[in-house]
Length: 147
Length: 132
Length: 190
Image 1: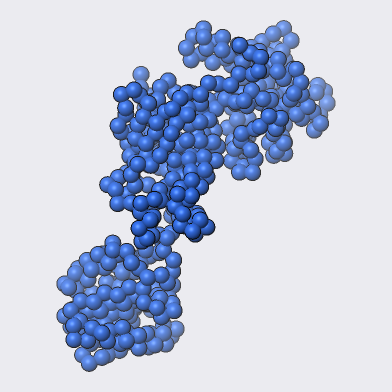
Image 2 (image 1 turned 180 degrees about the vertical axis):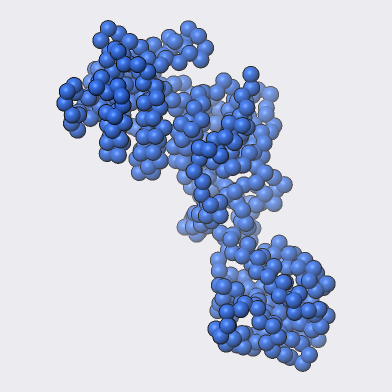
């Protein structure tokens, strides 16, 4: 069960957020609803601090996921400071393949290669590109771990 | 052995001229070539060949021509050159040089070719084919 | 352990990149430069600036493609950056491998010598004496490098020093590391 998908950019802002409600086909109004909420800031803060901690513990140590009683967070950070995060329930295995796909196939092709879509997001700007949103939904809902 | 080469654009404007040992009639060369242009312009629509040999005469000078797919004409006025085959091959390589000139983004069609490199290469070609 | 960057570069170029006809590419770039020269009335300094700014916009995107295809992380030092740019980056996008030269003692500056420059094939600069002294034909490369490196937190000054089109013996780009940018932290942390 995958609960939500978040993207934070190199300026520490949440540029994309998608909630997948349980037992209901995901509706479009759950896109980008939580970008400015505390939840986003807390999530980012947790990830940021833990990544720093892991790299201090050992050189080149990259935080890939962490798990609590109720959920598991899967992370991908690129050298350009983009952070892709998937929140799922505790039993889900390794989602790094899905994260890589979301970056290399989806983000790259719909945002980076699209000349009309910004790559440098200013404060408050989010990803509104429908190709990206639909593509992300498809990739995530069709992943074996989705439900 | 002497030779006068002219590259003529689509508006009958000269793009490039080269002359070797044409002293007695040097000043007449452009005019002679120009009048031969009319002949070529008639002939070019009747055939699909690009090389026109010996289309005109002036005294004992001959004129041959070559038309590029872009309607640029290479005209050569000559006396006692070795062979028609050499002229044909010369025109072939000259066409290659011309296409390379066209590929430069700063060159517009029908503009005069002022590049020294082009001039040197054409002279090299004439040495290669005609020993001039 | 030195990674075989050359092999990585060749592998990515052969197997993971889409290719287009190089003449089409050269002619497209050429018409961009020629049009800029006409638009700015041969003010070559402005043309250089525009080319650099176009390159910057390309660079900030190109770096994501580069990272996605090669999976590289951040470099340990500037020397590694130099090797990766020349053996993997240039190879992947332009199928040419410039040589890294003149690496400074403090490790902050190096030159890239391009043996063949696919952007400038068959190009001859216009005959007015200005172009040969003022125009850097391939200046888009300067912007690409600057933009791409900035996205990985490296503030680098990039500029052309020599160009075959100008009559110099080789085409050379100089890269100088100004500083390493700090990763941004959210307000309130630390």
